[in-house]
Length: 38
Image (cartoon, rainbow, N blue to C red; front, side, top):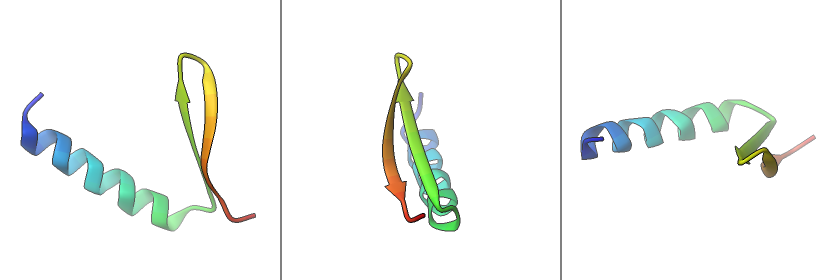
């Protein structure tokens, strides 16, 4: 992956996370709540 793709992807995910109430990151089937304002 190029550096630009990684940067743009990160900005996109941050913008999406600002608009939602809950963000869950899943790695190897294990969910980790990053944001929960409910």
